[in-house]
Length: 172
Ligand SMILES: CC(C)(COP(=O)(O)OP(=O)(O)OC[C@H]1O[C@@H](n2cnc3c(N)ncnc32)[C@H](O)[C@@H]1OP(=O)(O)O)[C@@H](O)C(=O)NCCC(=O)NCCS
Image (cartoon, rainbow, N blue to C red; front, side):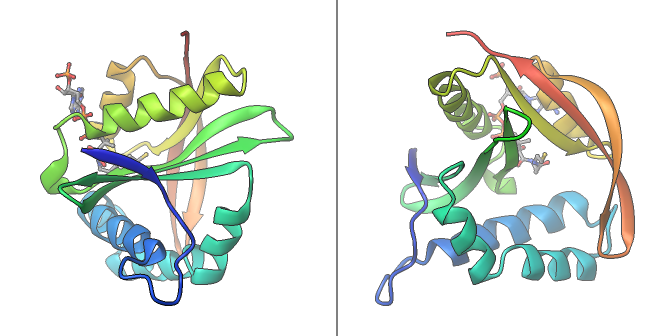
């Protein structure tokens, strides 16, 4: 298992990290959300939110970090964190592990990487949002000590779903 920061795709790169991120998101979104949100909307939202231009903007933003998890050289997981300068909080924006690789400890290791980033920046909590209907993940986060206090609606193209927002206290 290997964890590395994503990088800007070069013209002659055999591995394009923007493609890798989109592939992981498409696969996990369809597996996880298609019972809740129509597949066409998920695909449309991916195209809007993960265009090359958007991803390049995120990659160049010093408050955003992206980590790709690999198993035997195959990209299988993705973590994106962001430090919100206004709120003075660190967020996990995206955490996804391909279905065949779930339950093998990869998600926990990615959370540990987010925790290390948070501690390095002197935060004592990590924040995140999770779709309320995504019960396996809500329960997974709860099992790791996340506390959800707020539920906020979010509209993806045409479908509105609730998101639970919460945090976990972190210590060294
Ligand atoms: C949620 C997700 C990131 C977790 O990553 P993962 O690699 O599957 O999780 P891990 O293998 O690291 O978790 C391992 C631990 O969680 C436990 N666990 C797994 N699923 C659980 C659940 N639904 N409820 C409680 N505990 C759970 C395991 O028993 C294991 O415990 P242990 O370490 O004590 O043995 C991953 O399953 C995923 O990508 N899911 C689909 C997409 C998604 O919903 N992402 C979150 C969007 S906000």
